[in-house]
Structures are given as C-alpha cells and as structure tokens.
Image 1 (cartoon, rainbow, N blue to C red):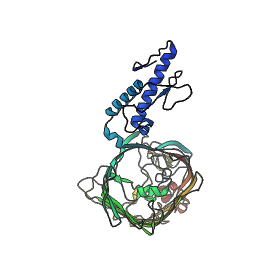
Image 2 (image 1 turned 30 degrees about the horizontal axis):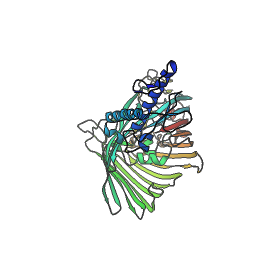
Image 3 (image 1 turned 90 degrees about the vertical axis):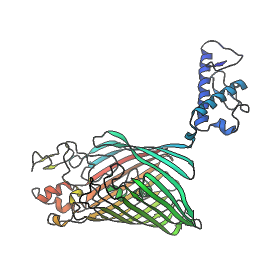
Image 4 (image 1 turned 30 degrees about the vertical axis):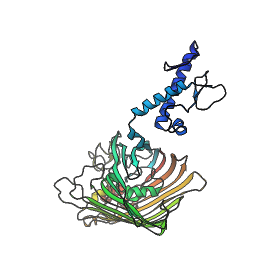
Length: 502
C-alpha cells in the first residue's frame, strides 16, 4: 500500500482501487492534521504531551482507504512508521502557524430578513439598513441584510483583550461596503478592591446606553431601542470605564462612563469638545452575576454639534433617561422616561431616488400638483426642520420587554414609544393642532429560538403621528395640509427576520 507517495508498506495492489485508496488515505491524513492543529482534535486531546506518535495507533479500511482512531470490523492497524510520518506532517504544519493565532477567537453575526410595508410613510428607520421609500409607495417589500459582523477577539489572558469588528453597511444607493464598527482594547480589573471593580476601554467602543439596552431588548435584530430609534449610536471612538460593586455575592451597583467623539463612529470628528456620557445602575435588592433582579438606572450624555472647524454657532445636544427594569433568566420588562435637548432624530435614511415619495408639490417642477419627487430631492417633512435656535426640548415615555416561554423555543416581545417635541415660537402659528412630529411607535412579535446560534422572529411595527387627524382633516388646499397633513400617514410593516451568530 502507498499513500500519495508519502508512506509505503510491503503489500502492493494494482488497478484503480489502489489509486482510490491512496487518495482517500492521504485526504484523511491531511484532515486529521488540520483538525489537530486548528481545533485541538482528538489526537492532541488523547495524547497531550506525545508528539512523536509512539503511543498512538491508527486503523485503515483497506477497501475505502479511510483511517480511524479506533479498531473495528474490516480495519487493519497501520504501521508505526506511517504514524510517525503523520505526526511529522502535523508538527510541520503546527510550526508554520504563528503561535499568537491560538489566542484568537473568530465569530460572526448576521441579520437577514424580509419586510413588507402595507403603508409607507415618513419615519425613522424601523430596522437598520433598510433605506425604504416614503408616502405613495404602499406594499413596498424587500429582502434585507441588516447586519454582517465579523468579530476578531484576541485574548491571551484574563487581564486584557483586543476586539476588532468590521461591519457590512448598506449605502443610500443600495451598495454594500465594509466599515469598522468596533476596534478597542480593554484592560480588565485595573482596580479591584473592597467589592468595587473597574475596567478600562480605549478605542472605538460601546457607548453607555444603547448597547446595554440592545441587550435588554432581547430581540434587537428586529426592533430598536428608544434613543437608538432617534439616531443615537451604540458606538463611538473614545475612552471609558466600566465596573460593578459587589458584596456578599450580590451586585448592587454597575456603571459605564466615558468621553467620546461628538461625531459618532461613521463621521469625521469636527467638534471642539468631546462628549461625556454616563450610565449608573442601582440594584436595591442585589442582583446575580447576570444582573437578574430589579434595577434603577440613570443616563446622561452631552455632545457638541459636529460642525466644521472653526466652530461657529453651536447648539449642543443633551440626553437624559430614568429607567426602571426587572430582569429574570426568561424575561425583561423596562419602563423609561426620556428628556432631551435638540435630539431631533430625522428621516434621513428614507430613500431619495426618483419617485420615493409622492404628494402635492413633491415634484418641484410642478408645484401645487400631485406628483412624485425628483431624484436627490430633500425631504419635505422632517423633524430636523424644527431647528435648534435657541433650542428644542423633547421628552418621551417608553415600555418594552420580552418573555421567553419556559420549556419552549418560543418567545414574545414588544415595545411602545411615545415622543413629544416642543414647538418653537416661530412655528406656533403653524402648529395650531400640536406639533406635527410627535409620534408613537409600537412593536409586537413572536420569536423562535431554533438553537443557540439561530433565532427567528416575525413582528408587526406601526409608526404614527399623534396629531395627524386634525392636520389630515384639513382641506387639501390648506397650507397646513400641504406642508404637514398630507405627509402624516402611518407607517406599518410586517417583518420576518433571522439572527445567526457563531
């Protein structure tokens, strides 16, 4: 027998069968080598400390050429000479792979789905990366790739680790490209005394609120947090500290605070001052290591307007939240109050291709006539038009949570968000029926946990303007109807999505 010219024995065969055997045995040997190098295969597990193959026996099926670790019917024991050759190849391959790679963990997160919009209107994005059209495009539907992460984590010991995460992003024109989501270095427990711990993060890292609330959502791949829905990012370049206070085996306090760029993670930084952000969690009755229990959290962030140098007129943004939350291994419920200054959100990701929205005056070449927008036109209805001079104040009320049914793969989730804008004095005459941008968002859905790597969800989401009726009941020739009422229809969608994570 021969194995691709590498190994030989006294027995020789002729014809097609020996060639098939040679190929099959060679492939089996290479497969065993690769497995032992990259995933610590059975050879290393069973014979750790033995690299010369003296204590290992291999068995071959002479008909198929398959190689086995255990004896069995129709299997012949291979000679020690062949086993030694095998370990020689394994050692050569192991030496060719850099030693640091054994400390690298590779993972991926993918969100894919299908969205059907029986009503299209102006709103913030119901889901990430959707770039859908506005009014006049009912029954719009599309398959989407909402997220594509590749996670690289280098962890040599428990004292520190490095994370780098590229993300697939979809642009306004529908093209997909890669941009950096995370790139940070974390030092663990730089302070650890009297029950209090402190970790240090440096780089493009998670901000205190959004990423934390993404975890509380439970089904983040199909719904968005209240402030996340308004455009607040989960990631910014900066420096931050995180930690907990623990006593008698229970966590009573957790925190996350730092300074970050005002420009976010996908914009150049053009602000003079950095953005301080902090979240403090208090667990009055204590919580376990996974923070199950009753918690009360406070959040605050301030950011300078990201304007070109030198800084001109500036109207900073400020955000605050008071959050009551209760978490168990199977469920979460959250009640939240929001207060903000100049956090206007906006409908900037509405597709602006030709025909993306239709209404009276939408076609600027035919004012006063029903038509559809020209390519690249600015949105005619957008909360950013409220302006920030001297400032705009907003407040919101939110409730969200989920319940994973015990002894079942099914779960239920939902969210309701109400958000109110102040009315600038200059617009008070036009907003006689209340601020037209005040809105309510509702999410209700069912999840199915196929396994620990794959989760499916189907949900319905509705976005409506709270003062729409009075504006939409006005005559179609009324300026308030043309400027506001005609654009204040509901957005309603049914989303089917899947999260894949390894």
